[in-house]
Image (cartoon, rainbow, N blue to C red; front, top):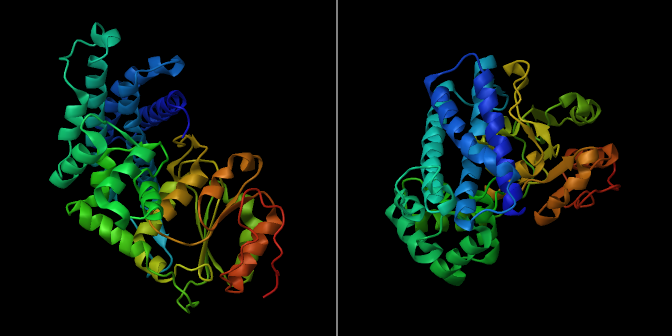
Length: 408
């Protein structure tokens, strides 16, 4: 994780970019107006911290709690923009059914607005406990940690957070949360499972876990049951044999400028591989969620593989000019972390140019690699066309060569 000050600055930049995008959006629903109003208040608080050299730990934790919510809101706004442009994309696998609908996007944006408002209150309460801000923000001095804990709607999560994470902890850093899981569940929950669970709960690698993230994971059920199901699913074997399902083998390709990959995509299609292309992380995730059953059944290197750039403008080209919601320098790791956090084993190759120097993160994940060489990508694709599952020369950071036959 980056140092807290840098992370807070990054969140400030993200919040401002979202607010700017919303203010420039001509077609504005009530939900978007509410989000815009809340973001405006958040930005007024965050902007003074852009040049800060030191922040109180309690305030840092409250601000970091914004991370997951802001990133998730950005992705949902991308989906909203895509709906506005062409009512969503089509699922080429199963009867050309649209894989998300406007009502669903509006619903999740409503949830985003509620969580942003709740986190804003936590931040204000944190500031009220710091003497430097008391004169500037005349609000009752209450304990932000108590409010954060009370925000848990699930009693089991409330008890877990109070007893194992800490009643005064606003935001559990990754190591602390992993230790809390170990204390609560013991050796029954292995280090590997705890690590993958952290991928799931800290999806955007802000640096820890908020109560809201844990509640989203558990839903209306039991914390213990949710973790048991996660552990059980993690132990399931991957699909072993190549299948003859329609659409296989398949490459899922995420890049904000598909023209960059025209030659490689043509090569894949000439090999009989279906290439599904997306221009944003949000669209790719929505498609993955809509096709979960298909992807789970065929989750093998011989069936499905992913390719992504490492940084991109998170937008949908159909939303019109100037629709970008921020240049996302961590886009490649976002999709990789999402897949591993949701227990997909499919290979992921990061294909980029100068951004290759920022792709060392692939070394932290299973079955992942990065390259700026087209030959490596072609070899990776050819191995899929050959329905191979054990090729690994493409794995690792900044791979230069991959000795895989290009003929089928």
